[in-house]
Image (cartoon, rainbow, N blue to C red; front, side, top):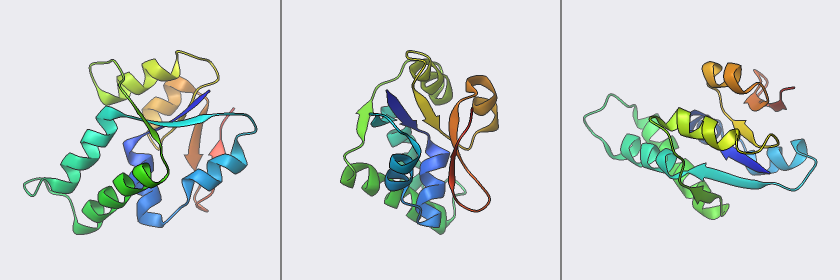
Length: 128
């Protein structure tokens, strides 16, 4: 089983200093592999380094921290197929019914049903 990390989830966790590795370990009661699509890594790098986009300094710092945490936590980087990053994540999630996406994206949540979210109290929640 894979737990697939989305861009907005990683940025939020970095901004709020949430230890998603520990929280996911407490939430998921079976063997899993943390993975991040290569396209998400590219997205984080472009948000961090693009001085022409209207991205706040805090968001750029969060992108940088998110990239460091991917490396430090040895999160697997995978290539996904799809026209958009979200479509690729959805395709990967659907390869195995046990796969879970960690995201804040409402649209993706509606499509997949079973996802990991962050509550208002900054706790991770596994839906369905």
